[in-house]
Image 1 (cartoon, rainbow, N blue to C red):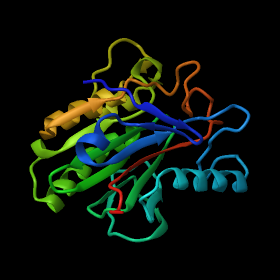
Image 2: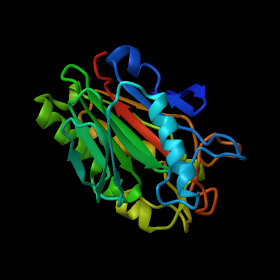
Image 3: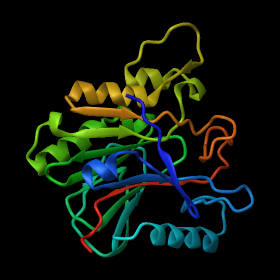
Length: 251
């Protein structure tokens, strides 16, 4: 099933996964590009001035109340998913592409600009996970690792898990060389180049794992006029969005 994130504000530009707040009590969303004059770049390793990026982070944190703790990582396009205990403050890990927790008030974060933010929840248990899935991470099995960790910690089976594959580049605009379909186990037709629908691959993986509910965003980061950053469309010069998932702390 396809479902589009919906804008929930313009200062800062935030988009929300529809239904997750009402159904599960979860805050699930992604930041947008913002204006061309003052792009809402949250990338810690982009070319924007450090002071500007950190000001954007403060604006984002102010727009998402109920989370005294936030956690993210220096991502390496791998399959490592970290279990995160509850904590206050802002924590940056090295070498991971996913996070899972059962702690209210801890906001899980990943940075993206074409790769897929994958939101996972076992609603009855309160367990959640958020993954950064590019083609390398998808080939490395990050989705299976996230689902496995969530199920083990929550004591649930995959049919009790819900998943949303979020804002990312579409298959129509994701032109790749042979190494990508080969790594993902996708048959190649013709001489190439080829196109890969990474969200479709992840949705197929989720169904093969037995995940009970799977939705896919219809937004494409690389289409002309997109309200999101795209590494591919910009030739590597664009900024980064941040995707988030968390259960707010009790008031």
